Amino acid sequence: MTKFSIRLGFLWFCISLSSLISHPQHVSAEGFRILDHGAAATGQGAAFSAQADDPSALHYNPAGMTQLKGIQFSAGTLLIGGNIEFKSSSGGKVDGDLGGTIANPPPSTIFLTAHLPALGLKNLPNWTVGIGVTSPFALQVEYPEDSLIAPISTKAALPLIDIKPTLAYKLNEYISIGGGLDIYTFASFLGEGQAELQQSPAPGFDLEANGTDTALGFNASVLWTPLRNAEEKPLLNLAFVYRNGADLDIDGEFLANGSKVADASTTIELPDVYTWAIAGWPIRNARHEWKIEIDVEYADWTDFEDLDLQLSNGAVIPNPRNYGDAWILMVGTEFKALSPALLPKWDVSLRAGYVYSESPFRL
Image 1 (cartoon, rainbow, N blue to C red):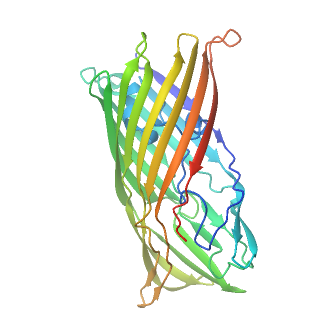
Image 2 (cartoon, rainbow, N blue to C red; image 1 turned 180 degrees about the horizontal axis):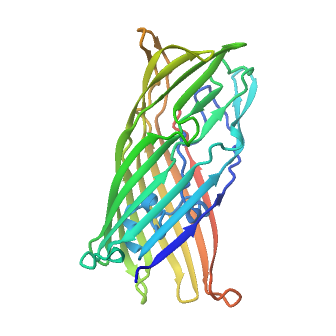
Image 3 (cartoon, rainbow, N blue to C red; image 1 turned 90 degrees about the horizontal axis):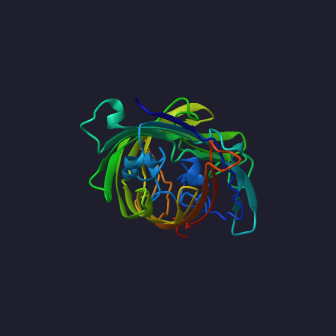
């Protein structure tokens, strides 16, 4: 009989973006990448690559999919609220937001995994397949059209979706490997369905550059479990994940007050990302589980140097970006009560986490 498990994670997660000191092209965070792609991971500060034991493993560590039995499905929406504050060297301030009180559109995820024996392929017990859809760069930033930075930016949006066909293989009881493709593209149901950069050089005069592309990246990972308990559950996991950044050759239009001036193009080079993670379970028995995890991530934004706009009339509009690399530290813990007396048919988890993220922007 096929096992089918459904997990719906509605991720109510508010980020207070306080004390964000920015230049026109600078936000003090790890670029514009979203770290949260699952409820359990979000509750632990995104420190989940070594645990990777629910369908969001498809994103955090594909090798972890070998821990999942049957067919499992997970869907979630990340609700992010907050504001962005720009400060100029002269002391002027401008408040912006993420497209509203709650980021609009809200980043969302869908994950579906299947252990191949659950699909009737009994002779392939070590293989797990999956497909996922995430929105890893979907946040948009908006500033008032009459602000002091309006000549530089009133809106920036990159509503990409990432389609992730993925495969994992269990080499032995200790080591699993995984990997897949990252198909980055735009969809009409997410935001405006295109990358956008808007500015207002003068009152009543608005400029916009927009465009789309589809690009291919890939990911690869390993999960090593050197220590298990008597029930064969992990007590120590170590993980490594590599995500290759794709190059988006954006083609679209350059508009003035809504009227097309010329065709336009630019290149957005997404970062390569490397993750090292370790998770340990000081307690893991029939009644309680306690996990502690530390993830360290390196995002290489050094190729994200400019967004110069090439126009079909031969003009070039410079738009420099001075990005470098960024290190991210994620620490998380989960305490789980298994079938507690008050809720014998439930597992109850308490999670906490901390994230420290460098800015890739270089002054």
